[in-house]
Amino acid sequence: DEACPPLPLDDAPNLPRQKLVRLLAEKEANALLFRDAHRASVACRQAISEAPSSISRPLLELLDASEAGGVFSLEGDDLVDAAARLEGVISSVVSIDQDDAVSSSDRLPAAFIERNEVFRGVVLRDHRPEVRDAYARVDACLTELENAVAEFPDGDDVLYDVANNVVCLRGAPSGDEVAPRDRFRQPLPRRRTSQRALDANDAYCAACSDASLV
Image (cartoon, rainbow, N blue to C red):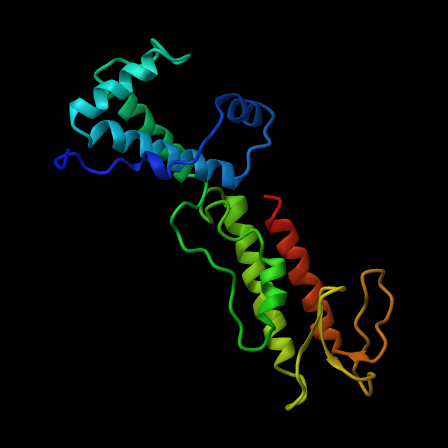
């Protein structure tokens, strides 16, 4: 029927009900699962509310004949309302459409920031004061690290040691410079940094780790 709008169900993720309930009960559901639940809810609501009754009614009858029979009416209004409420709850906690990209920097390697800011785009920054404060600490620590790196000698390329998650310069330390530490807190050979940058690097990584836990 050309008058029937395309249904969004083809793009809806398949969420097994028992798995979803189990993960929620065990508090193991992650942001990806909640985003899938949000997409599935939107697809269901639109399929019922936007399709003509010749399409939505059979869908509701199939639902009524399933294990979910008797939960919702065959008119579908209560199903649409329930889906809208579910979407509101999920979007009040988990980032759905908001662009919360990792920080950008003209002084620090992008790979360093991307590795540490894996918490971005998960929980909304303003969901709870603890989340907002954790994000603010990350921002402040990143600014301090950028300022510390800005004091490096001109012309020296800032390196990112992936294995030890530290930014530094090539070469042995001299003068007031210090050797950055590896993941076992031992000096890295042929690498140098300043004490300010070393402290700022540690503080930034710690702030990112804390932010991923709130």
